[in-house]
Image (cartoon, rainbow, N blue to C red; front, top):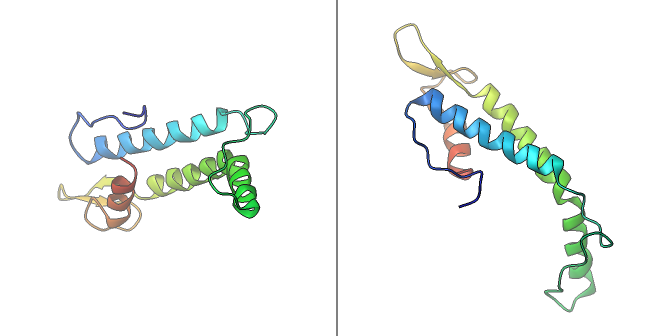
Length: 115
Protein backbone atom coordinates (compact mmCIF):
# COMPACT_ATOMS: atom_id res chain seq x y z
CA UNK A 1 0.00 0.00 0.00
CA UNK A 2 1.52 3.40 -0.95
CA UNK A 3 2.40 5.64 2.00
CA UNK A 4 -0.35 8.16 1.24
CA UNK A 5 -3.17 5.63 1.35
CA UNK A 6 -3.61 4.37 4.86
CA UNK A 7 -6.88 2.93 6.16
CA UNK A 8 -8.91 5.37 8.22
CA UNK A 9 -9.04 4.36 11.87
CA UNK A 10 -10.99 7.33 13.25
CA UNK A 11 -14.55 8.37 12.76
CA UNK A 12 -16.47 11.51 12.05
CA UNK A 13 -16.41 14.31 9.53
CA UNK A 14 -13.51 16.21 11.08
CA UNK A 15 -11.27 13.14 11.15
CA UNK A 16 -12.04 12.18 7.56
CA UNK A 17 -11.41 15.73 6.32
CA UNK A 18 -8.16 16.02 8.29
CA UNK A 19 -6.98 12.63 7.03
CA UNK A 20 -7.61 13.53 3.41
CA UNK A 21 -6.03 16.98 3.80
CA UNK A 22 -2.95 15.40 5.36
CA UNK A 23 -2.78 12.90 2.50
CA UNK A 24 -2.84 15.68 -0.12
CA UNK A 25 -0.30 17.75 1.80
CA UNK A 26 2.05 14.75 1.87
CA UNK A 27 1.64 14.23 -1.88
CA UNK A 28 2.43 17.91 -2.45
CA UNK A 29 5.48 17.76 -0.19
CA UNK A 30 6.86 14.63 -1.87
CA UNK A 31 6.36 16.07 -5.34
CA UNK A 32 8.06 19.32 -4.32
CA UNK A 33 11.05 17.47 -2.83
CA UNK A 34 11.39 15.06 -5.76
CA UNK A 35 14.40 15.57 -7.98
CA UNK A 36 13.48 17.04 -11.34
CA UNK A 37 13.54 14.45 -14.09
CA UNK A 38 16.29 14.91 -16.62
CA UNK A 39 17.61 12.36 -19.13
CA UNK A 40 21.15 12.83 -17.75
CA UNK A 41 20.19 12.20 -14.11
CA UNK A 42 17.43 9.59 -14.31
CA UNK A 43 17.82 8.19 -17.79
CA UNK A 44 15.33 7.80 -20.56
CA UNK A 45 12.51 5.30 -19.99
CA UNK A 46 12.16 2.40 -22.39
CA UNK A 47 10.17 3.18 -25.52
CA UNK A 48 6.63 1.84 -25.56
CA UNK A 49 6.05 2.70 -29.19
CA UNK A 50 8.21 2.95 -32.30
CA UNK A 51 6.66 6.38 -33.00
CA UNK A 52 9.05 9.30 -32.51
CA UNK A 53 6.13 11.57 -31.60
CA UNK A 54 4.99 9.16 -28.86
CA UNK A 55 8.57 9.10 -27.54
CA UNK A 56 8.71 12.90 -27.42
CA UNK A 57 5.37 12.97 -25.59
CA UNK A 58 6.65 10.44 -23.03
CA UNK A 59 9.79 12.47 -22.37
CA UNK A 60 7.76 15.69 -22.06
CA UNK A 61 5.40 13.98 -19.60
CA UNK A 62 8.24 12.82 -17.35
CA UNK A 63 9.93 16.19 -17.51
CA UNK A 64 6.78 18.04 -16.41
CA UNK A 65 5.16 15.51 -14.06
CA UNK A 66 6.77 16.83 -10.86
CA UNK A 67 5.42 20.36 -11.34
CA UNK A 68 2.05 19.13 -12.56
CA UNK A 69 1.52 16.82 -9.57
CA UNK A 70 2.48 19.64 -7.23
CA UNK A 71 0.02 22.00 -8.94
CA UNK A 72 -2.81 19.44 -8.76
CA UNK A 73 -2.06 18.89 -5.07
CA UNK A 74 -2.26 22.68 -4.53
CA UNK A 75 -5.71 22.70 -6.12
CA UNK A 76 -6.84 19.83 -3.88
CA UNK A 77 -5.52 21.58 -0.75
CA UNK A 78 -7.40 24.76 -1.70
CA UNK A 79 -10.60 22.78 -2.33
CA UNK A 80 -10.27 20.95 0.98
CA UNK A 81 -9.76 24.23 2.85
CA UNK A 82 -12.86 25.63 1.18
CA UNK A 83 -15.00 22.48 1.55
CA UNK A 84 -14.57 21.59 5.21
CA UNK A 85 -17.08 20.42 7.82
CA UNK A 86 -18.61 23.00 10.13
CA UNK A 87 -20.92 22.13 13.01
CA UNK A 88 -24.16 24.08 12.69
CA UNK A 89 -26.30 25.68 15.38
CA UNK A 90 -28.51 22.62 15.71
CA UNK A 91 -25.71 20.06 15.80
CA UNK A 92 -25.92 19.36 12.08
CA UNK A 93 -22.73 19.32 10.11
CA UNK A 94 -22.55 21.43 6.95
CA UNK A 95 -19.84 22.36 4.47
CA UNK A 96 -18.21 25.72 5.17
CA UNK A 97 -17.87 26.47 1.47
CA UNK A 98 -21.16 25.45 -0.14
CA UNK A 99 -23.31 25.12 3.01
CA UNK A 100 -24.68 21.75 1.92
CA UNK A 101 -25.06 18.86 4.34
CA UNK A 102 -21.70 17.27 5.14
CA UNK A 103 -20.12 15.55 3.38
CA UNK A 104 -20.80 17.87 0.45
CA UNK A 105 -20.56 16.54 -3.12
CA UNK A 106 -17.17 18.21 -3.68
CA UNK A 107 -15.58 16.58 -0.65
CA UNK A 108 -17.22 13.24 -1.44
CA UNK A 109 -15.76 13.34 -4.96
CA UNK A 110 -12.26 14.20 -3.73
CA UNK A 111 -12.48 11.44 -1.11
CA UNK A 112 -13.51 8.95 -3.80
CA UNK A 113 -10.70 9.94 -6.16
CA UNK A 114 -7.92 10.11 -3.54
CA UNK A 115 -8.07 7.02 -1.31
